[in-house]
Amino acid sequence: MAAYNPGMTIATLLFATFLVASPQAAVPPAAALPDGTSEAAVTVLLEDLRKAELFLAADEMAPVVAQSLTVVEAGGRLAGSFAYLEPMRRMRARKGQVNELRFEDVIVRVYGASAVATYRFTKKWVDGGARKQAAGWSSDVFERRDDGAWLLVHRHRGD
Image 1 (cartoon, rainbow, N blue to C red):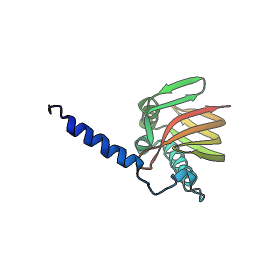
Image 2 (image 1 turned 45 degrees about the vertical axis):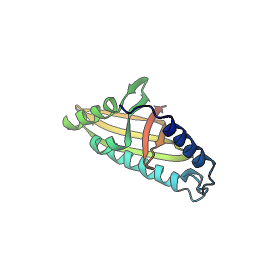
Image 3 (image 1 turned 180 degrees about the horizontal axis):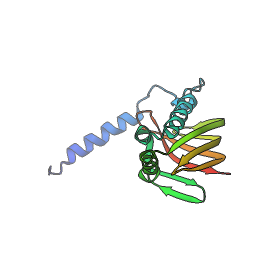
Image 4 (image 1 turned 60 degrees about the horizontal axis):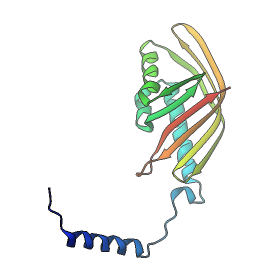
């Protein structure tokens, strides 16, 4: 453990004050850019998530799904990426299949380091020989990481 050095503490504070007071070039955050690059990036990610869910490719989804993900769907709540992705892995292992997964009327809005995508979804699948289907509205919330990548942090699906 380093010994306390009051001279070093004062020097550190002076340097920090200098950095804060120095004029810095104004660089707009990506969300403020007029070309919609952030909206486009989230739209591409949403399509990648749709395709991964269609093919039950949970391992492909994992890098862009927050470990703290929450999902509210069909009257239930899932907490954590494992609780969301593991049922997909198990369905794939059982030879289940998603026959159709459509996202329509997609609207993406970016608010700084957060984004919200709303859309209508239609999903038809077979699991354990039983045919199932669901349709309704979905709202997905994304957060931008420090490296600029977007993560899915919340999904809410309902009628």
